[in-house]
Image (cartoon, rainbow, N blue to C red; front, side, top):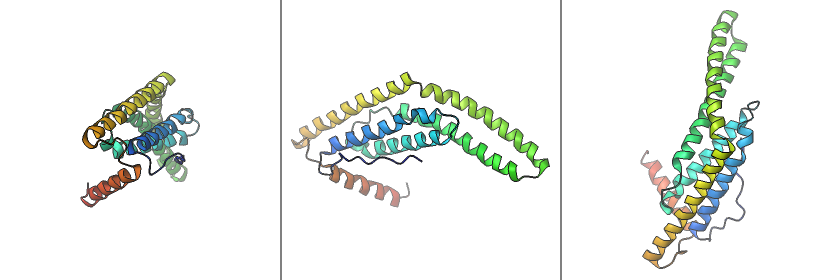
Length: 192
């Protein structure tokens, strides 16, 4: 699994809006950089890595949403994650069925072979959808839309902060992080 890269430029004492934008841009870049690996059908880990990177991005987006307008392209990210998930689910199922077939009695192997073939057909359809979602123009459009909206969302929050507090950079990333962790802890304790 591809490890999330450290964001060396990230400073806890930086303004929350600046740091949040940096984190989201970095996670988006990581996800998009995995395009070629995800389209390499010879290695199912490429799809897995991009799916995990998309989860990281969507998780960060969810956590930071209170500090930005919610007009970021959730739907586009969700569609991409769904396409990645459909391929990955079939990869995992096929792998598990193939492992069972290797250890199975001969009379069971035929049934497992039929299940594997059906899953392979579903995976091929899922791969076609994923290839369309990851076509360079489609991915570039998603990335451009995300970055445009991120810039506007961060700027809009700053304007509201200036109106309310008179200080656009008053909240640090550290303080926002503490608030996010407190909110998530409360949510976890509440069971939701």
